[in-house]
Amino acid sequence: MLKSTDVFVVGGGPAGLAAGIAARQSGLRVAVADGAQAPIDKTCGEGLMPDGLLALQGLGITLKPGDGYPFRGIRFLNSSLSADALFPSGGVGLAVRRTTLHRILADRAADAGVEFLWQTPVTGISGEEVQLGDRTVRARWIVGADGVNSRVRGWAGLSLRTRTDLRYAFRQHYRVRPWSDHMEIYAESAVRVMPRQLAMKKSAWLWPRTMRSCESNRLWRRFPHSTRGFAAQKSSRPNAVRLPQTAR
Ligand SMILES: Cc1cc2nc3c(=O)[nH]c(=O)nc-3n(C[C@H](O)[C@H](O)[C@H](O)COP(=O)(O)OP(=O)(O)OC[C@H]3O[C@@H](n4cnc5c(N)ncnc54)[C@H](O)[C@@H]3O)c2cc1C
Image (cartoon, rainbow, N blue to C red; front, side, top):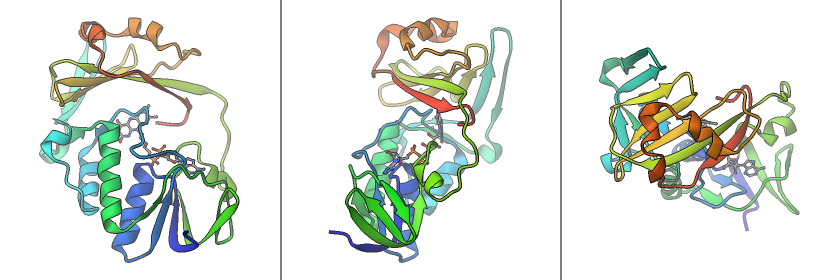
């Protein structure tokens, strides 16, 4: 059983796994703990920007064409206008299913020698110790990568403020032929549509600013005309998340 390590990473999402791989590349012993079991899904837009792909390369990860669907820029639309731009210098982003990204990062971290503690919630930190329920692990460095509602931030006394106003995000994947090589953001209805590969999928976002209900079926009625056509072809269950107003 793990008693001590150089770096203890709390949270095994993309940030925690990336931090773990980078620390291993520097020759440090690393443990990553997450309360969930890999591969971890999350309500996320699933778009990797060109800079993100470069950062992954630095961690020894090159995503293959079959891992996702490339997009060359971003387009904003409302009922009467659209504006788009290509990424600078011919850069290309990649729409990747979150579970695929997580699996690839976790595999690379395992190859690099990161020790995983899945289904292991961290319950506190103090000095150079991390608490995992009734056991502790000593660490020279503790990395808080536990997401937007980070408890590590609070335990470390870094919480700046608490906000009570919330936003709600819903994600749904559809099986349709991609019609665009841009990520599309529908401004009026707060819908974001990502071209996706894998048997012609798109993932769609609803990001209402005012809704107080997480009842996603009602929200689909607010879809723009171009996406209503594939409402009958859903390829995944909707995911929902509630966010502090500041989260992006
Ligand atoms: C609606 C929405 C859309 C987004 N769209 C995009 C996008 O298109 N492209 C993009 O790049 N980013 C997008 N993001 C942002 C992206 O999802 C986050 O930046 C990313 O998930 C952050 O990764 P993370 O590892 O910091 O946190 P998370 O992915 O939240 O991972 C945190 C992990 O910590 C674990 N954890 C929490 N507390 C503990 C604890 N006490 N003990 C152990 N484990 C713990 C959780 O189980 C979780 O696995 C979006 C975010 C939202 C909310």
